[in-house]
Amino acid sequence: MKIAGMVWTILPVLFLATPILAQSPQVRVTVYNNNLALVHETRQMDLPKPTGICSYRDVAAYIDPTSVHFKSVSNAAAVRVLEQNFEYDLVSAEKILQRYIDQNVRLMPKQGSPIEGKLLSTGGNLVVQAADNSIRILNNSEIVATELPKLPEGLITRPTLIWQIQNNGPANQMVEVSYLTSGMSWHAEYVGVLDANDQNMDLTAWVSIENNCGATYKDAKLLLVAGDVHRAAPPVNILRKGVQMEMLAAAPDFEEKEFFEYHLYTLTRTATLKNNQQKQVELFPAARTPVTKEYTYDGARNQKKVNVTITFKNKKEAGLGIALPAGKVRLYKPEGEAQVLVGEDNIDHTPRDEEVRLNVGDAFDIVGERQQMSYRQVGDRASEEKVKISLRNHKDAAISVIVVEHLGGDWRITESTLQHKKKDAQTAEWRVPVPARGEASLEYTVFRTW
Image (cartoon, rainbow, N blue to C red; front, side, top):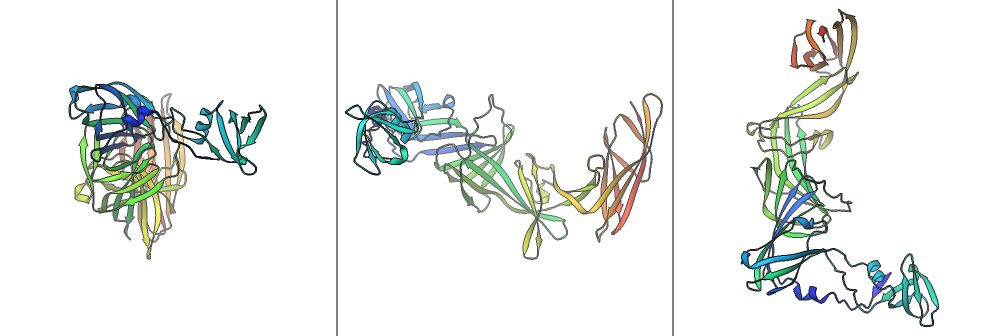
């Protein structure tokens, strides 16, 4: 249904107090991983004297009003906010009609003459009482337009902070406003391309910023905080809408540094964060780093499958050395002129000089088998177990498989066909070489007490 012919009049106080921008506002947006952003704006505004009402528009629809901080840069001691209201009752056809219950309206149907009368109900159908007290019930689909004399009081076109100001200084001042809002977050995405021998990887990092907070921030200074910031209450869940994709690629534009117990990534140029948009910006260009491919067999957890992992060091000497924010890593490998996805995994926030392990998937041509050969109880609190691990390699190249065994209690290996490594109090590891198109086995005996 269309609403036409309105005389748009809002509360006079809002028109009188609308900010007059003497210069473009300066905006700084700090985005966190967990659906949270801190918006800091500097604007030139006309403030009422000595007291009066002032409106601050273009704030986020999901603002936390209790987090708002107001400060006059020009004369902080002269200005106080006595009262604040967050107005978010936005204009819509349904809300306008609801405000006109028991008032006269003029409806334009698809066929016939205009219908005038008192609007009694808007729920599903429109109920109108004509001048002769007759009742007309009209389906919304029958109405082409509704003519109303003016915009009802109390409705606004965009979310607005309304302040009652006490001002003992000049009318025109520079003010700072900051607030927290949900509906905005960011995450990292990595693309790794392995070489032909799986010995090196070209790793590229991107950050994706999602803005669903209900406001657009033009030419903003953008900061990203990597880390888990504790909050006193969970953020509001935001219903995701369709988002517009935007991708920006250039030389590395982010400066990274430690900040409190987190890491801060600052974009060295301004960026516009549109509402309902996902923006992708390159965190760092492709960096070549050596990698190691490992095969691991954990027979107690995966009876037949041999897992494949790619590991690398986040070190400057290895081509990296920047704190890596948490995100998804997709691994590709060239095949002719194309690239084929070989696996993907998520990484946590990774400091410099730490190792990164990527779980790629399970090997197709390597099979493992675990058999318990014998078991006997030795007294009330002791046992002895003999285990055989068989590995079959159907590849054309020899490989090495890490065999992992989980051993509870106080244990020791009394016999083994290969040397083992005690990884921790509950885990033993063996490195088993397996020939091309061949088989290999490991047998060991473990004695436990508890």
